[in-house]
Length: 291
Length: 317
Image (tube, rainbow over all chains, first blue to last red; front, side, top):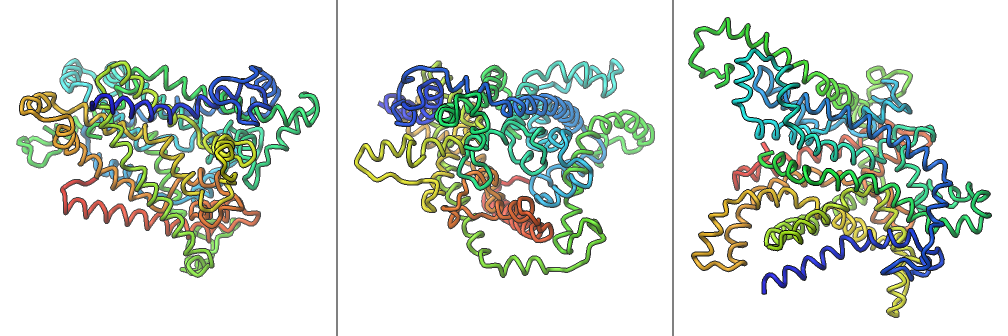
């Protein structure tokens, strides 16, 4: 009895979770008229790839796509190196560690606020540069704590003592012993940092002015959120009217192209998660316990 | 045993040991340095810069060179017409979000733990994490598409059932349900992680003993699962209280329209609009508002933490 109720419960939960995603997917390969009349509910209607063909024309989208790949790959790589090195340090005992811990944790609960952060970036000469997209949010306190807990709990201290007897210093031990044993936490950090950067919208909104530097999410906003004060999506689509058979046709295709944009922008993040999923779930659990 | 422990027995031969420690530990500082530099430059520099909230900031004079005006901008903010409304909106958005959003991950974790079909359980666990990986912009876009008054699926269903089409995104009454509902859809699954980790760490012998004693499934949930989840749930609650005034600004910004301002006008968005987006940005004024928020949030989390430590021995620090 309990089992039956539980299965029904989960079928409802999974429906709520997955159906909106399914709707996006089937709408992206349907005919615009069917989508506009909300006839696309279970399976694609009048299957067509015209939405994707239109999206392929949106040069600005792909430019920002490339920008986001750069920010994500370079930024997350740097974040992971910095985080792992610091996490190792904090997993050992040394004079002054308490103060360092306190200083780092404090930033989790208190910050200068948006404007002082913005002015600081401007004073450093980082406003409207690619560097700001990489250096902002370089280290997340939460990720640092997760990585430290992981190193503390899953790498035996005996290994450290054996290494010390063999004459290893911290550098040798970190690079030769800790890193090779940290595959799981590397996967976790890659997903956390990678997805956060790929999906980040606010940093670019505040810190960038040139459209050529825009990350994907800023361009997506113009395509998707047509009611907000600054972005009218129609202007975006109208710019591609010549290549898409006139304004009328371009706007018609845009109704499906919006769904296609969601698909092409979201798939990388979800794929990263699915590929890393095996290590990921395990690593998050270890890192979060006692965290 | 730590050599820095004052109670360590070998206090009498510290000199060589200290030298040894320094020789070894400088490498730890080198490994720590990049992260430390980041926190100093990107977190502590702005904390120093927050003094512009008490000054009349002019870029030409810099942070310390601008004229000191004391509480001028705080007074300006607290006497402004929309101040009360913004505090209320921000608080209500977060309080309702916490009220509805907090229990669901706990429920999901308990129910997931009770699933005994391994493959289905694995699938369910993987699936409920997926919405977390969708960006805020896409989430807002989905809301615009699904809840559109003319061709959104929700309004088609409403009109098909004989109802009247609702312009959701322009209605003040619908801002909070949309914001919180989508938040739950996106993150309830993800937020189960901690609870699931806690449940899987429970000793299976406890369940076996309970079975022998004739406990029902519900009995085991009530007497084993829930008591184990309480400490971590209280910690999450404390953490969440620390952001009662600092909700997801970018999402609110994306969902704010001229129509729903009566409820969507929240402090974080206001700081952005007067300090960054406005043609003539008011840096000092916006900093003062931001500082108020951060101080209030900080005080709340410290208070809740202290109360919780007194009452239940559960605390963050």
